[in-house]
Length: 544
Image (cartoon, rainbow, N blue to C red; front, side, top):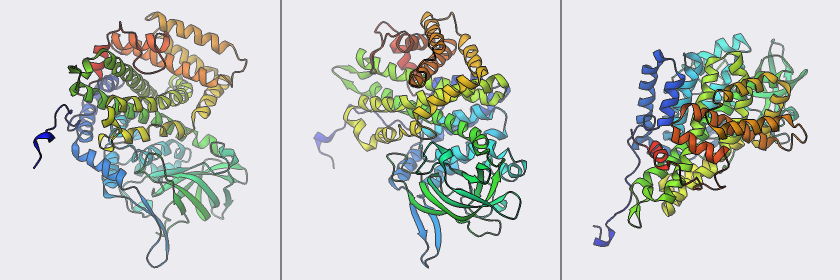
């Protein structure tokens, strides 16, 4: 029995049992903007169902369980046979199954699939980000496999299936399959052309034997993996099935699981190939060209994942401050706290708006939209993922000491927040990729300028930022050393142009003033006090 001194007061109720999709005004508006009207009713129904499930106390508990019980490597069975299996907590399988059933691998199989999936991905990130790795790899493998019609016919229906089949068995016996990826090696990292894994041709056309290692192999319990290896004619893409056609296990030796800062529920591994059977994907020597669309898809998922983490951090912070009182008033009504929350909300909405615009470009598939993606994806991946960590940390600070306690959920967001900036090419890789697009593909810059130009004349600070950007693009001296600065400006101008066109005036005004007009500080909570910050915060409040 609690004593009289243990009465709990001035604590916010749990943020649970609400619709994560419906409560996100920026996200719902983006879906309505980018989906054809005839698809909206079905998409809204699916996303609302996912949003309600994602906001439930039950799924939040599964997320905690999956993270408190990380995967364990089991190299041998009790008889001493090599099995190379990874054991997961049941909560992991429940979450992964729901992610598959929600269509997070099915974008290629339905109209408007990329926008619908992007919205679902952003919502699902807020539940538990670890299980998104196999979902992302599986989704992204489809364009690479399409370079080989026979492989695509065999695998694509299983990869885009909405059935989660966790058993390891031949693909022909499965209703659904998941894919992983292994490109980096310890001596090369992002420089995949330094890979030393060797592929020796076998008698059957298109089949090879692999020998080598992968320093990072994502989702090692998947049904298949796309890997890069050196064939006789150069770096080539290969498909490594986990189980061979006769039901025997392929040689896939898991050496260890990585002990990571965050993403604890997900298994990332080091693997060895020693006479591993594989099939070639694409032409010999064209490995990077074959896998480049997969990389672009996973990079967009990094943007979506960071946008989702930011949204959940901001939702938690605004929710807490809406109920918590200090010095005679609700925290949300205190001018300085309102400034902090509004600043965080701007970052979250800008990330969401940009991410859904890129997903819409994927659905469009036209030449102009593909050219835009060539610059916009690496620029967004660079900037949005880098903003995630400071947003998560500042949101935790809004909760005070409560935000430093594991039960609040904020520490898990903070640990997860750097991941998307590091994975799939860290910051310098993205900035240099932007430079390559600018130098080699003039149509990409043309598509970018046409996109941001649609907002010209609507805000003088945006107009000035576009002019300054053009001046910077005209100066090629020391361009590599300025690549990060240039990439940041490209991303901010694109975000600003989208918010000016589509966001409420108070949001666009605050973003342009602080991010483009120089009227903001280096820390959150330094917005001009004359802005309509209360409306910005209210828009971010998680209520359906």
